[in-house]
Image (cartoon, rainbow, N blue to C red; front, side, top):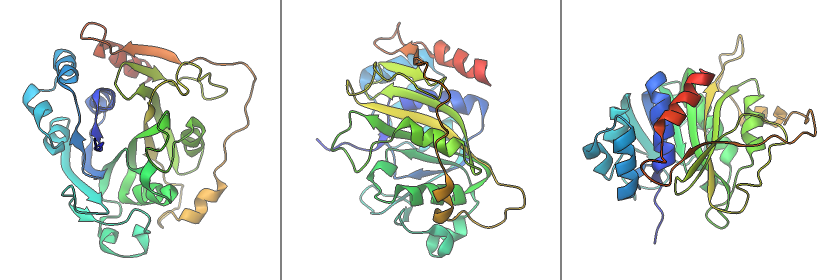
Length: 269
């Protein structure tokens, strides 16, 4: 059975919780995203979130994102199989010309739910997201970390996201792990020597997070791929293992608690 790029229980509730606090504005999605929620997932979300059942039942997600506060939703893809608004290759440099040049600096949110792992030059896809965003815009991702062997070209180490957050161009605001089936969400609270024993290799695990675009003082030109060569992971500061904090079990309606995620966002805002 073909897997479609789209929303699941975890990445939707995290996006909804983020959108309660920060406007999504003009949104671009990498790939046209589809609703992959199971009936039980929809019941959980209806019982715990302010999202209407009718929106959750639609196959396409444009109305859902609008319901969450997006003012405009556009999509891009390399093919027209899913009806994307713009047909482009993410490995092209959008700042160097072509149809996407007119969109540079036009979006408040770029949503990358399961696309970059399929792009051989994924750093160019990231650079394009940066250049498409307005200053202070956000790149929101949901990308594979563990257990996705042969799903795509890449799985991403948490160190990758942390390295981006230490660069002059990005600020890592949120980073969570979640299982594909939505039964657990982990809040990544310590960025050095994290213990991954609970998740590594056991199930399909993805990283959901928010990276904010920062513009160095005096900068007026688009970011170039060559500039990312300077990004490095900070040396580990101690050998003390830090654990992942389990914040939500999503095994059933009662165990799934949006209040847990709500408190976590409140605590760190």
